[in-house]
Image (tube, rainbow, N blue to C red; front, side, top):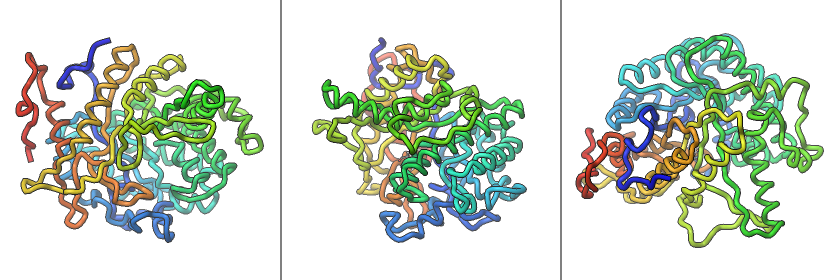
Length: 462
Ligand code: IFM
């Protein structure tokens, strides 16, 4: 295995490796009433008292709906190859069905053209949680009709934009839009019902498979796939009960989504554990869900450590502002494990990786935010990615989460994940040291000698 070069630079990665940044529609766009957009479940959820920690909404967010040209300019200055964004379903079909809203499609059309004009590859996600409220009113993802509506929406968007984007992911993190949303109740629609959550997970996967079928029929050049958030589960000890606890976490979090997509089956141990709450799988569903994909998107943030008595928090580790353990080795382990356990695995794109830190001091007198912990987080996880590539795993891209600070769901605007700092008072974007570091990493030629610190900090071009 090659040791991670110090300092790390992109030349250590395969020449065609894609580096990008990622966001999602509801977290940045704002303009929730513009141009015929319908109401999403997150608009509703934000208005329910106590749901969002700081009482905020997505009404303005980063105002990206109006400021996208400046944001794309910043991405170009940053030097990334690619931008991963998501399409807001209620902008395309206000109630989740029926004819497309042209003005909604026009927005993403301009965005895609704006990316291409700046030499940036568009990577599009169709569903990053902003379900039209009208579809929640008929049961959301627990209603199989919603999976059919999703396939129809996917066709509409792919017909209009699919010829110009590099990849299309159907869903982002179906664990979050099912278990976290219908069982744990932390995300919209905020239910606490395991049976509904498991049904929603199945509905989402079915929607993914049906959307794949619709989009394949269009014979696009874009790669088609899905994005899962995966959480490697480690036992706290070798005791059989701790090992079993970790296996259960792995089963509900990871295998529940990986196995149907890559093996056309649900993991039997978890089907048994769910008992009467297991999903109602119709004949043919699993073949639809297991339609071949061109890439597997992996979002990695942290790991879990399980014991028979519950989750453990290793005391020697450091934690991000989300209280998530910083554990880069988990990314290498996860990628290697996927490679070994799933013979049908297509190339992996790391579609999200990043860390929230408070950035409490805000911009300094030069307008720069100093975020050394985030710089270190990115360095460590890019190194962990490189180690997996060296171990033989096919990883083709890495997208930092996030391009800029944004609406962090139930946490509102208090958690900052951005490479760029957003002043929500005046909507100014500020470079953080992590953005400057990424810029240097992306632009640096392989060094013939170990550069001194002043050589590796490039001045931002903005
Ligand atoms: O902000 C989210 C994103 O929407 C989905 N993946 C995890 C990120 C950090 O929580």
